[in-house]
Amino acid sequence: MASKGTPKKLYKKRSELTVSISRCRLCNCVCDPQHSKNLFGKQNQPVLCNAKFIYGGKLPQDINLPHLVCAPCERRLNNAIQLKNTISETQRVLQETICTKRCVEILPSVSRQFAGTSCRRSIDFNISGSQSESVSPTPLALHVSIF
Image 1 (tube, rainbow, N blue to C red):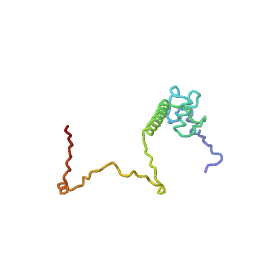
Image 2: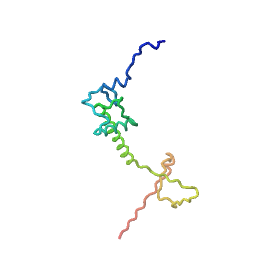
Image 3: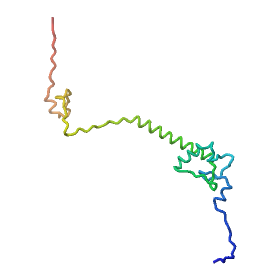
Image 4: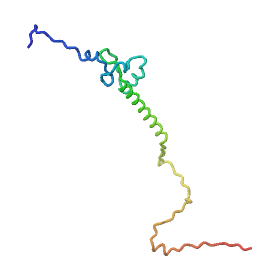
């Protein structure tokens, strides 16, 4: 083990090393500060709100954390919000076009009212060939009146 007199080498924290390098807060890539926006600036509040919405939580402002947003991340944020809005609008339109039928159960205690006989008549097409020959069609009678 090292004795008390052994000199110690001090290292800076990783975050202190990266503060001097401009990095994007969202993708952590090195970015040009002239082409990036301050995420926490007053004029960039919509970008911060979109980032919080997509991330699903807070993005704390800290001097040890990057505060810039690169242009590609800003575009990605805008595209994600547009996609979300498109999906929401599509779902709303599709839900309006769905026509659902409601089935009403009839309780056994409720009496059903039936119309006597149906006016509809059906034709039985399940007659075999021998039966169809024996059945002769009834002739139609023509009534002719002569004056």
